[in-house]
Length: 188
Image (cartoon, rainbow, N blue to C red; front, top):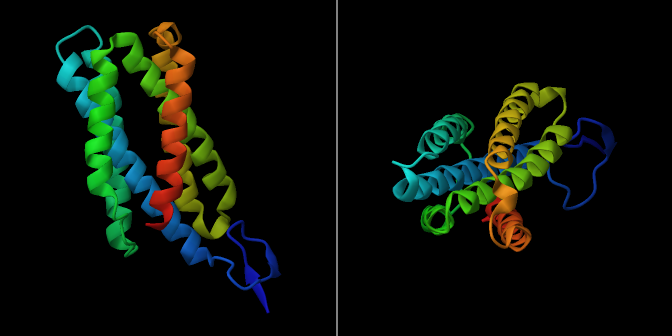
C-alpha cells in the first residue's frame, strides 16, 4: 500500500511511519510549546530590562512571539491537537532563562535571543521543507514566523550578543536546551 509522506511524495508506507496527520500534530504541538517558551523568555527579560535601553526591543520581539503563540493556540483548538504536557515546565524554564540572561546584562540577553532564534530557524526550516502542498497554509505560516525569528536573531547580533561573556558556551548550552525541548515537546 502506498502512503503520502510528510513531504507529499508517494512511497510505500512502512510500519511505524507517521501519517501526515501525525506529522502535522507534532509540528503544531512543538511550535505552540516553543512560542510559549519564547514569550516567557521575553517576559523574564522584561522583568529585569523593561525600563532599560533595550526594553523597547524586547517588547517588540515579545509582541511578535505573542502573535506566533496566539496563532498556534488557534491551531491547537481548530485542529484538535493535544498540547504538550510540558507547558508548566516551559512556563518556569522560559521565564527563568529570560531573568537569568537579563540579569547577566544586555549582551547576555541578546546572546540568549540569538541562540534561541538560531535553533528555531533550523527547526522551522526543516518543518517547512517537510510539508507538501496539502499543508501549504501551515507551511506559509511557519515560513513567515521563521522570517520574524531571523529578524530577532539579527537584532541580537546588532546589539552585541557576540560580545557577551562566555558567548560561545552560553550559545551552545541554550541551543542544546532548545533541541532537547523540541524533541521532547513533539511527543509528550
